[in-house]
Amino acid sequence: MQPRPWPKVPELTAQVARAVAARGPYPLAMRVRDELGELFADAEFAEAFGSRGRPGWSPGQLALVTVLQFAENLTDRTAAHRVRYGMDLKYALGLELDDPGFDASVLSEFRTRLVEHGMEEKVLDLLLTTLKERGLVKAGGRQRTDSTRVLAAVRDLNRLELAGETLRAALEALACAAPDWLPQAVPVREWAERYGPRIHSWHPPATEAKRKEMALVYGRDGFALLEAVHAPDAPAWLRELPAVQVLRTVWLQNYHRSVTEAGAEVKRRESGDLPPGRLRLASPYDTDARYGLKQGSWWTGYKIHISESCDETDDLDAATDQATIPGADGPPPRVITSIATTDATVTDAEMTEPVHHMLAARDLLPAEHFLDSGYASAELIVGMKKNFGVTLVTPVLMNSSPQARAGAGFDRTAFTIDWDKRQATCPRGDTSTWWSPATLRGTKAIVIKFDKETCRPCPVRDQCTRSKTGGRTLSLQPRELQEVLDHARLQQADEQWRAKYGTRAGIEGTIHQAVAVTGMRRARYLGLQKTHLEHVFSAVALNLIRLDAWWNGHPLDRTRVSHLARLDLSLAA
Image (cartoon, rainbow, N blue to C red; front, side, top):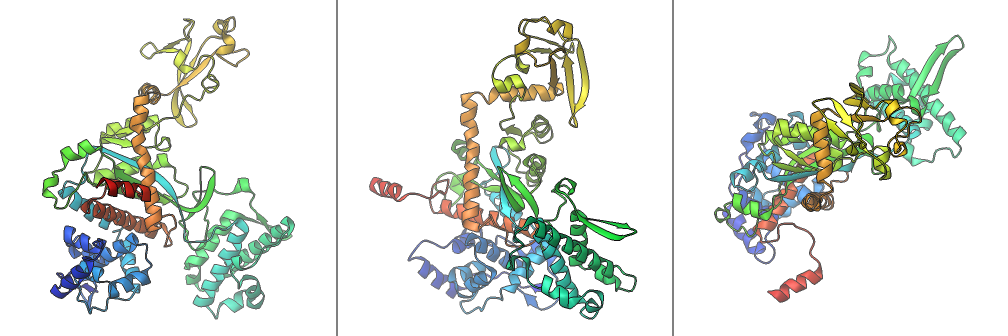
């Protein structure tokens, strides 16, 4: 499909749209076209669209429609309807008033092309490039990042439901792909009653014993189907069907089968015998979704990590020449600079370095990066400073020794460490007799021991160690990491540091805005790539909403203003 060129705004469309817009708030779509022009050039999407065939819709236009779709949290059908009947969108897209628009399926095909060609982040890259050229976002300064859960576009299934629905999905796929083969392989009439309805359409047995028996029935039927599919006389292509491959994986993860002289015996795996959560499938329809746990809440799906600029007002004024930006009123808005989507099992700490790589690729690394403690460790604080030149402003976990937790006795900070002499001195002036590098729980450490003959007669022994016979033992990280950790713990006890760290709290408002405006909490599509594409378009939509508010003279942070505050502002005016 050959994209048709992005046209200029027709004179009649501009005249009518502006006349209607004059009677109320200026529409976001029209403001974006006026301020940013052809934001998404077709040439940037050339890789995903052919140069031959009948002319199709401009990928740049479709990108803008998709962004505006997320700005209003619309379905594909409603977005296509808006293009057909909305004058503001006709203005933004440069369409004649009588242009019939396009079928809603075009938007789905457009997203598929972007995913297939690895262009999920193209629209965010183009917007940030434009904003960088205008001085609205830059490297250095401050940024903040946080994550939140995203529910997959599938039902939550327990292990019994997962087994039954996976087998049902495989049978449905085989019934469509090989209707002549399936009746010869399985008892279709019997299985149609058992696996015809979706699992959620009926109630499982009430007793635990009956549920276990049902799980074993599912297991035996699943193995029977897999044997039939892999039989020598079965068509080889059957085993390549995605639903059959998912069935095989789910059965490997949830069942055992042993073959003895008495025959094949199927057993369900116990909880301790299940594979790690990162590998375990949670749905037969979205094989990227995983079970996640955060703050005591379980969910099935993904996590999103959002980064945004959060420079102080004075810094922004010094860095931005606002006189060159028509309509600017006040400091520029907070701009979302990075979006990362992972499955629900990936921890925040695992994403600290990848997020910085993404920012570095856009030349938008901050000088200071505000994060919560989930993203931080001594290794990461040192590594981000050394590799990216970024200072992580984040609390670290406090000393977890029994003395520190109790707030009594001598914790690690009560000992003087002489790194050069490889020796520690206790509060009473005695020195250690053992200093040895070690590996504790997979990480490098230094173990320091005091002689038991020194510690045994000590009058404050009870405040120092719980050992009945041995001496005091200390565990330290390597010198560079331990010194960074000690400095961070000392800093975060300071009131001035706490006030500065308060800057991070603003990212909570951004997450709320993303959830409330674009519906980011619930994924629209199946799979990690399409879910990430959704998140990128949502981020671009939020950036345009914030820019629109800034162009219209609204405050820096677009939070909901109470009616009382509005009344106070009107009286002051």
